[in-house]
Length: 182
Image 1 (cartoon, rainbow, N blue to C red):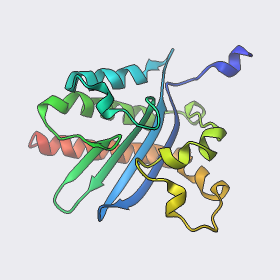
Image 2: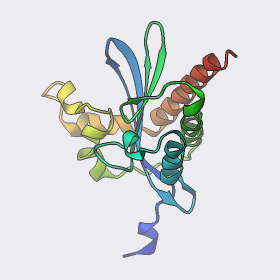
Image 3: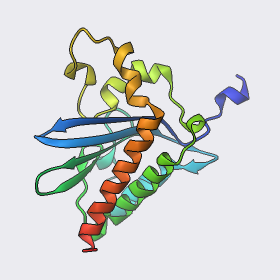
């Protein structure tokens, strides 16, 4: 195998974003596949943050794949909630390492160069349908006349992904500001 083709330039790939309604509230989601490489240990850092808050690392593991991360922000009338792979993260002292990780990760994504944002075409048309929004198959939410080739690439638009990463980062910041009464 050609060594140039086997190099992953970042430990984050297949980053997608979505906005939708869940439980009568507006939700924003960013999903990605994490790995460790020469630029960072994104997957190990995620599990390290989890280990700081629980001894059960599998509690926050995505059932589709251990390297898949879904961050979902729900804005309800009275509260802002953040979910990691479908699990609510309560703003408290114990969970601060995970909030910190999400903040750093979303800042990293927002500042990535387009060429660093690797998106595998096989992923777009296979795994992404079930991976982009936790617990939801996107194709089941759209009209039958839309073919995956028409809508799936839109979730991976690099500019949209960076904008969503900034929104998620701001969302986390607001939760933390509220928690710390700032």
